[in-house]
Length: 171
Image 1: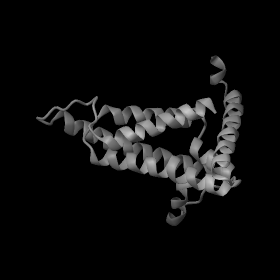
Image 2 (image 1 turned 135 degrees about the vertical axis):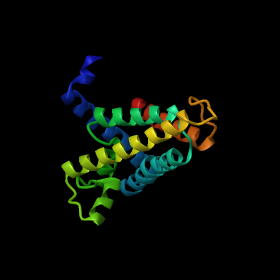
Image 3 (image 1 turned 180 degrees about the horizontal axis):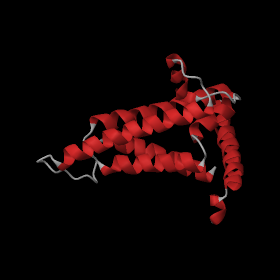
Image 4 (image 1 turned 60 degrees about the vertical axis):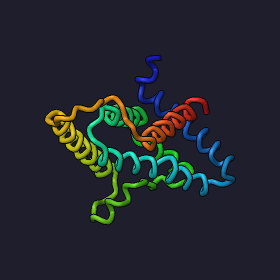
């Protein structure tokens, strides 16, 4: 159980899992390129974009914080984004950086320190938005149930991520 705390064990574990998941996706789609673009859009970009839109659109809710913390913990455990690692393996491109390519358009050099810095900035922005929403909730006369989300898209996204985690564990 404690071997998950060892960084070398986690590196080996992550590499084996990425290879198994990638091979599974390749067997489903027939080639690396199709499997890679499936991973990019349907496992990575679309779910995260929908979650971010719901986060901005919906009022304060603790469920968003729980999902956000789980996401941060997975980035820490895998020492980076597992989706980008799978995409890199499928595209056979070590320089693939996923959505961070946008930084290039702002003249920001695409290297590891800058990508980590951008991730920190985005997380701080999300935290500030979340704290503002919490403040609005605290001073609102209408106190809603902050442990309940009446939005089917949110629950579909949660189900999708649970299936991804389950798939990751069993593959």
